[in-house]
Length: 177
Image (cartoon, rainbow, N blue to C red; front, side, top):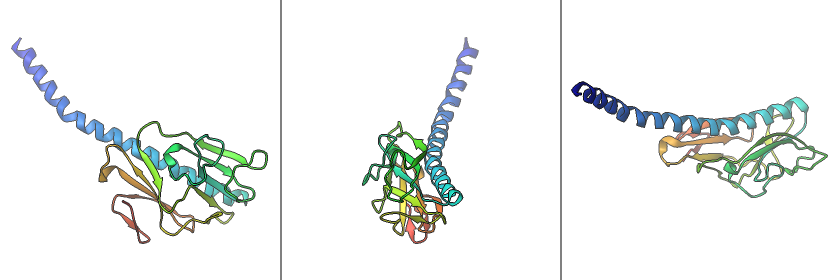
């Protein structure tokens, strides 16, 4: 009986040590998957624009079939489509829907500064569009629980370059917060 109590005590201690680490690992994997999902779709859009020689747009979409103009909450989902006329509006019959990302199921927020709700890449791979991509554009992911360690930013430049930043990291004069 004493031996069983000792084994159970050791098991309880090991569980108490490992559970916080497990939570950290699962949170880190979720954050990486969310930021890499948008990064991958942006890189895909840029590559398709160069390959096809026409504009391709990535925009916030709450219904998975149209752009939500003015909505900067990327956690609501997004679509990638060939934007024949470059107006950042998905037109059935004229434009081709390339990818769809559904809304996040959790409570993480993914918002853009500079009121960016769509990014369009031209045939040379530059980020353009009806309003352009302002210098210093960041799409910031804040995971729950909010902490500096769980904050990531996707920086988009006018040249079409995309980089992931951690909290308080600066790139081209813009700091991820």
